[in-house]
Length: 111
Image 1 (tube, helix red, strand yellow):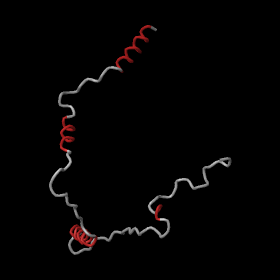
Image 2 (cartoon, rainbow, N blue to C red):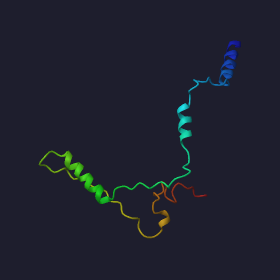
Image 3 (cartoon, one colour):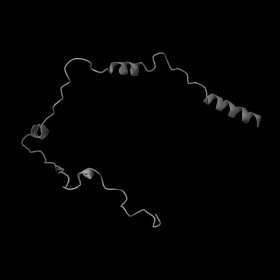
Image 4 (spheres, rainbow, N blue to C red):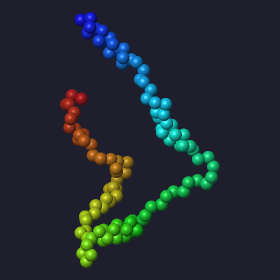
């Protein structure tokens, strides 16, 4: 029984010991990355990056798909999903998914 107590006490004391330091360079990459993150103090404001418009993106994707198809064949047209605007009415919940439990289900009768 004394051996079990000694083992338990040794295990508990070893859990309270400070972790050994891995090396003097441990965390140097993180410290360097954080030091490089400085607020831009002077100079002109950063310009926004502009992307492709939908027509240009469509032309580029069509050209890419045609370049992958064998010569003299047309690439298979893939279905496209169009997402329309939310129906008119309550716009505050327009992008909210439906509840996982309907309003009256899951409730007890005495609540």
